[in-house]
Amino acid sequence: MASLGWLTLGGLAVWAAAPLLDRGQVETVRAATGLLGAGLLLGREILIRRGKGPSWLPRGFDVGLAILGLLAAAGYWNLFQFHYPMFGHSSDTYHYYVGGKYYPELGHTRLYLCTAIADAESGRRDDVARRHLRNLETNQIERAAHALSHPEHCKDHFSDARWRAFKADVGWFRDRLPKSRWQRIQVDHGYNGTPVWLLIGGHLANAGPASTSRILLLRLLDPVLLVLAWGTVSWAFGWRVLCVGLLYWGTNYPNQYGWVGGSFLRQIELATLLAGLALLRRQHSFAAGFLLGFASLTRIYPAVLFAGPALQLLLESWRQRRLVLAPELRRLALGGLLAAALLLPAAAISSGGFKSWSDFLDITRVQSETPMRNHLGLRTLLSYDANHPARALKNAEHPDPYGPWKQARRQTFEQRRGVYAALVVGCFALLAFAVRGQPLWVATVLAAGLIPILGELTSYYATSLAVFALLWSRFPPIGVGIVFLSGLGWLLVAQFRVYDQIFAWISLATVLFVVFAWLWAWRGSPRAE
Image 1: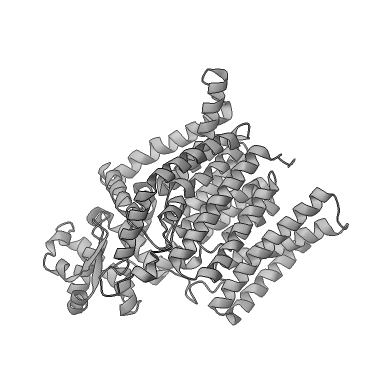
Image 2: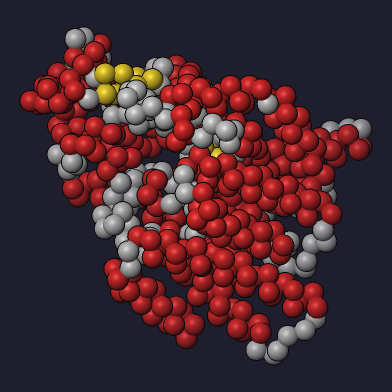
């Protein structure tokens, strides 16, 4: 109880002192927290292996870990300065609130088109004619004036009542932003939720018109989910593992609050991922499978975690020359299958049929073919060419200033596609060795390393790698490595300062960490928990 009191006082102190810091100082605190956390974990590991240390060391470590974990948790929220100072993310909330609420009319491709028509009908026709928008069917940036010549391409999908409601909701967001910011939003990348995300988010958004109180309530869902999810980590793994997880989650550069913090249900897959792994650790395999299946259907990429158990099944069945489905694995699979059996048809019914899934896959394909400067992963690494940086190829006169750079990235990757395929095969082989003989929950966590290997996701999805911290008590060097990866990211930012270079180097560091984690799980000796 005394420790809890001191931690509470520490949290209040951080909250009170944070307004005295500017953005650069907040980032310095986050970087220092990550590096100090890695140093603390590494120092403890060295002393344990040497069998030396003063008697006060265990308690001193606990106090230090608790303080740094608390500071890291506050760090994700920019020490409670959020978006300096606003809590909400206007752009991302607009995309997911409006895009989800009006999905039957907008689909995945008409958000910016219909926003342009709504703005024009609200007395801003001249502003619309001068700005650009992204054509979400092609992902190309075009002049918005083209949209004004054929308003029926948008309005034919709406009833009169729904069109009035859409214009009012768009106006609510537009009126709270500077004109320049509103114009930049229209060349973003649209609403990309799956039909299962829509099953939840769409119904919540349709509860009523956009208002200050309603939008705030929707934005508070993510913090609640995160608190509950990290609470399940503490319940299943203990508070020390919780702090190690917070050290990565709250301090890593790719997952900054500015990307999607303060938005609407943008942390739902991370929350269910953490909760699912916590349940799996406590041997509630069926419930774990359901939550992991749910996470996969809300954002797709978590599905790779099932690869770990699948590889275990294949290896053991091959060894015994017969199908070997352990009871725990069977329950995990049944939970995942139940999630799919319930949620796939429910989402299809809610969103107008299974075509919503094909539309989602189409927009995902278009997005995946469009390089972004904050992409992260093995493909990002192999697409990088130091001789063609974004700042050198940028054409400020072009509607899409980074168009030439994107084309150069595509060409570079095509030249290295064979290398990519070979590395992916090698990674699967290494993962197979890593999961062999491991507990089911460990194999599932280890498979998260496939996320940056197989996918090329925007940087903030690197938050999912926080699950590697769950291995700290079993494989301490992996816990040290994931926290060090966070601190290293900030050192790379200080060195390179431009996105395409920063994320190429962070991609390299991330891939190396994943390989290290798999090698250690394969060759290292687990510590008694």
